[in-house]
Length: 326
Image (cartoon, rainbow, N blue to C red):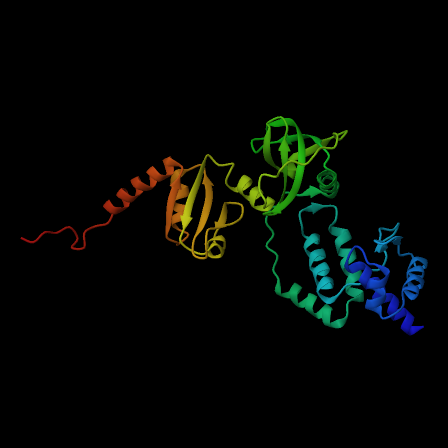
C-alpha cells in the first residue's frame, strides 16, 4: 500500500509538470505497465483529481481544472517561489487579495519542510519593503481585463488621462504590464487607430463587452519594453535618442524603467531613449549617468547641447586665474 501511495504521488507530480502525457510515457517514467497507469489514474479520480483521458494514436492523459482546488505537489524552488509571491501580494498593488494572501501563506508555512521554511524566513528577515504610494487596482478589474486579453474580446471603457479629462474608448486589449507599482494595459485604440498604453487604475470597463477580434501585430516583440517606452518616454514633449558607450546592463542599472528604454547595440554600446518636458533637464539627466555618449535627436536637444557646451567652456577660469605677465 505504501508503494502504491508513493507511486500515486509521483504520477500526480508528473501530471502537474506538463499538459499532456501518453500512457506509455507515464508507464516508462513510473516503471510500471500501461494497465497499472490506468488503475492509478482511476484512483486519482476517486480522490477528486480531474484527470482527463483521450483515446487514439495521439491519446493520453492530462490534469484538468476541478470544482475545488486539489492538493498541489511543488518542488523546492516552486514552493519558495509561491511563498515569496504570496508575501509580495500581501503588500502589493491589487486591492482585495491582501487578507487571502496572508491566509494562504499561513497554510503553506504549516506544510513546508523545515529546510524550506528556513529559506523563506531568511529571505523575509533580510528583505526590507520600501512602501511607495501605489496605484491600487481591484482584483475584479484585473481579472476582467486579463480575460479580455486572453479571449481577444473588445472592451468599451471610460478613461481618465493624467490631466483628469475623461473619454470613452473602444479598445482591443493586448497585454497587461506591471511596472513601477502600477498596472498598465497595452491595447489598440480603435478611435485613434493606433496602439496606446492605459493606466489600469484610470480605466473602467463598460458593459456589455464588445465582440471578439482577430489579434493585430503587436507594436513590439517586447510588450514590457514598449509599455516602458510609452509611459516613461513617449508621454514627454521631448524624446531623446542617445548612443551610450557602455554595456546595456550597466546603463539600464542607472535608468529606471519608467524614465527610459535601453536597447543593446553590441557588447560595448547601447541606445538610450529618454524623455522630458525640459531640454536642460534631459541633457543634465543623461550627462550625470556617467557614461560617454552621443546625442542624435531631437534637433532641439542637439542644439541645446551645443549651447551648453559653449556656456560650460566659458565658465572655466584660465589656469593662471586670468592674470597676464607684466
